[in-house]
Image (cartoon, rainbow, N blue to C red; front, side):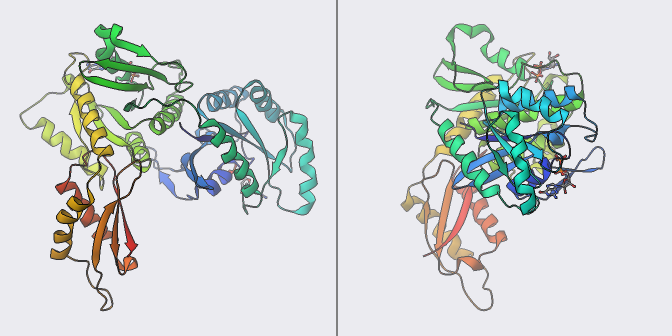
Length: 434
Ligand code: GDP
Ligand code: GDP
């Protein structure tokens, strides 16, 4: 199950500073449309061996200096729905404000684990000042300074403990496919086309995840779980709200699934937010199928699909080895093909290559084109095996792992992809000392 920590709180308390510290990414991405640089709002963190996602809900509030109460209310409510734990950030220098009370009131009613984070505790004097936050009725405050990082270790110790306790939810051992994509690409239509006339062969699974709608499909030799991020909360008026909701739902669904079916609108092509979701799937090492929907609306010539595929793959680089399926939910064209492709990707992702076969195939390739010598030193790769991880990972054992370049590792990955089918699956290659 997904482990997600959502950072909430009114503007200027230090949410994005804490986010950056937890995800250690001060990298900002440039918003292609407006040309403005904006911070990332979600990323991965790891503490005591547990990996989890962090979302800065404040990053989605526009004009964040004077946010309306209603706006904060919305962000917090959604965070409660989607996250496993909430980090409620406050500014110790300012104490409890009216906006803080609004947030606290909502959080008190939720059943989610809430951590009261007293931020900007930069010095000894301020430590005593956090006592005020007991009045919020949400438990002991954690004293931190997001800027220096002090106190974040104790906070994270307890955060991952809370997440660990949450993990023991039931897990069904069948492939899980997440249907994700921006609003209006056709997610609901896709699911209806798939399930529509065969409703009777579908069993809804209660309680597998709390919020996204999960449906088990068993018929005609198929057995999989669909994680649906469509529907629910389509009421939002504003474009940015929609983006916020779809990203929040996508993060959760991607973490819960084995293969992501990323739907895009054929008329719009692959856009910045689609690429964000793609990278999210990739960094979570999930399988991916790109589904170009509304294909019926495109005027075609004999090369249409080929050209379209090329354009998409260019934007996916370097992870281009991804299947692309062209669908129309209107005419039901290739909807089942998209699912069958996801099943194939799932096979690729769970594939185990016998050590002997792996070495028989890859060692001659390595011998033929060994890593370039650096400072007169030659790297000798002697042995390869697949590691027993949940997504394909390979260790290449050699004398001087530190001398192997990124470029060479990419060469190995390309050859592995050519020799064994890993289409739609991110693979990892490590160089290890023998
Ligand atoms: P957000 O609006 O809640 O995301 O807040 P930001 O992360 O943008 O921080 C608001 C301001 O508080 C910025 O000027 C930060 O540099 C500052 N700030 C954040 N954390 C700390 C801290 O631990 N100590 C101090 N003194 N300032 C901080
Ligand atoms: P969602 O927001 O991703 O769940 O998208 P919907 O399934 O609600 O579809 C959004 C709109 O696109 C609706 O008006 C659908 O009828 C339309 N639509 C969905 N799939 C197709 C398709 O394959 N072809 C055409 N022409 N329209 C589609």
